[in-house]
Length: 204
Length: 235
Image 1 (tube, rainbow over the protein chains, first blue to last red):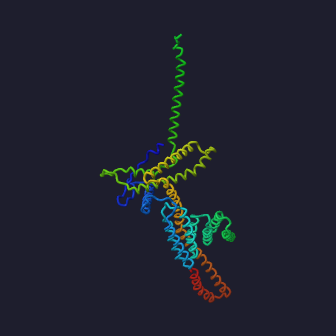
Image 2: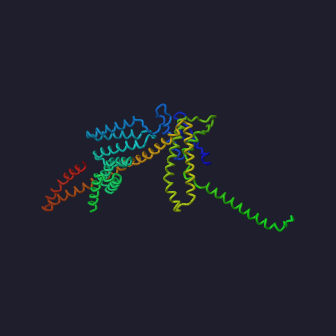
Image 3: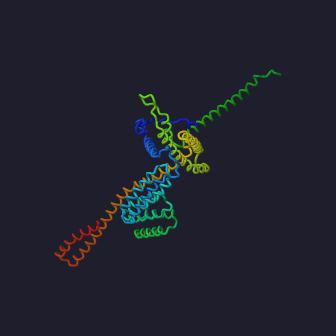
């Protein structure tokens, strides 16, 4: 194909110190700016690789260090939660989330989903204990976005928070969706009944 | 015998010449138009920005005043190639999802032939692009060609996940604000209810007694009791 033989030249310049690439022509498009920012951040990330490697290794096996740190933070959060110190638990979960989300981008996304869904779900529970319904609802939504199947607890928390805030229709659709993913989960079915009861009562 | 009547043959020969001439011109013009049309078909994808950046980095031009082109470190080149591979992954996903829909639409006759042509050209270009990236990767680091697309695939998937999570997290502030307002509204409503109740309880004894001085007496304690309930409501 003739298209494969030529390309559009983009005037670029490189900062000799930081080695970051920028557009040489002053009015540059937003897409180019965004792409160059992504390129520079990926370049910085490549420098975090251990010494002999110059390119990302295959996604599997994973460097176990970060996974160990994330699960340690989650455990500490759980311990605080058991002692009913919910605010501290939330701090630990937040740190764990930061750790899990700053994992280098070429590491398996499935692993990130696994770690992140548990942390979000636990943080939602801690927020619920404090009565922070909106934060808990957002966390539960993030948890089910990371993992929608086999995540009944997070679905339940999402439905519960919406119910507590009086957003009955949203709660109903969330729980109905949860039942699609989870099959006949007893707690979810009960929650759905409760929500429908409330809707009927408010309708009268 | 050899005395051919050239003059008599002139007419049929002219006829044949005109006929073949017409055919030839028609077919060349027709083919040229057709080729032009397919070449003018809009490409399936827009310009490949990442590929342009990568190749531009390889062909840097010397800046004004200096003779040599600036040296681009290999790590930047590798990062640029990885970005290019990520964009290729996104395009492959688009092509795969579009393929089934496109072919069924074509069978039903819902879309024209040129769409299918564009699609097939995009597919072929993608194949060449992938081969090119693998070759470039192997040239930069031996053996990288086998794993560059695995890494690129994870980078693309992680980007999708992180964008979704960021989107959800961005709602948190507005949700909180909404809930504060909503809670305040519920509270004022509740307080009004309480006030109504206290007024009712105040007016009832006043009506039963129906005396001027008692009415004044009835009103004075109502303010502190209302304030007390207000404080309770805020907790």
